[in-house]
Amino acid sequence: MVIAIRVIGNASADEARELRKFLSEEDELRGRVNLDEHDPRPDALGGVSDILSVALVPGGAATVLSGALIAWLRQRRSDITLRVENATGSSVELRAKRIKNPDVDELEGILRILNEELEESSEE
Image (cartoon, rainbow, N blue to C red; front, side):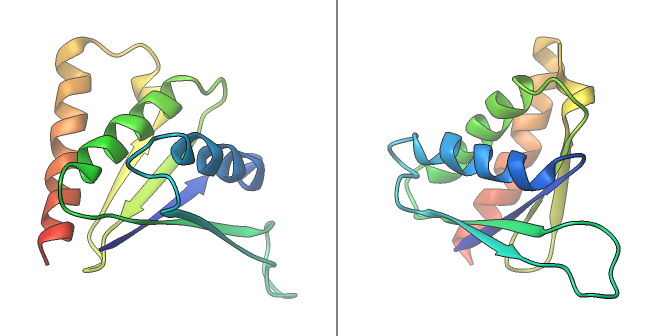
């Protein structure tokens, strides 16, 4: 199952590259994270369109991915959003400004929702 992750915010191209590097350092995700960079159409506003694709395999990779995404977001200093989409088109958005200093219950709730979404994807 392939999960698509879009980085939304200022300097999204640089942030996407940093996220790819961060995720690739996880043993369970190494070699499974690709960055697809596309130049914008001439008539489109904005910069490069970047989408990370992560190939998940059964056995806990979804849990590793969700934990790594939360850890990466907590390190951000600027407002940023990640849109995580599964193969069915269902998506979850994670915003750094909302989880910068989360309480334990909030963080566990975000992880639970993301894990459920990713686990459903990997079962299909």
